[in-house]
Length: 106
Image 1 (cartoon, rainbow, N blue to C red):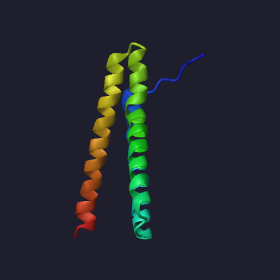
Image 2: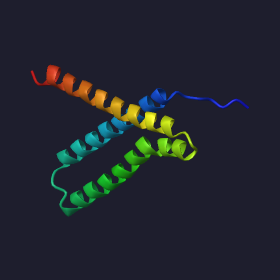
Image 3: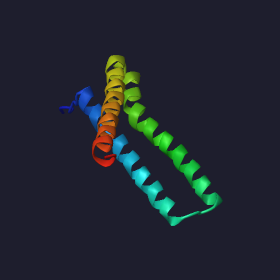
Image 4: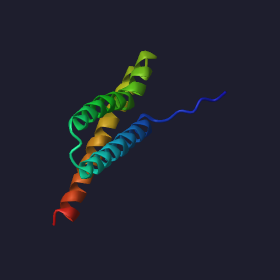
């Protein structure tokens, strides 16, 4: 049985896109809840719960598979995936910031 193999850069791109999409969904959710109005102390509790959940989910997304690969003995490949993922996130963040500055700030 042939095992499919993905290049570290492709895995990292998928992970970075997952992080970006999740962040956009959380930002949309927080913006929607802000329009509801003051929801009292439950808003603070929900924010903290979302923060803890997001930290765990993003840690698994960015570091989970590379850690698995490194535990199997492929340390350099795991480190490449982490580096590519963080690099892709940084580049996509800069691109989004540039779009905002050029099109919405004018």
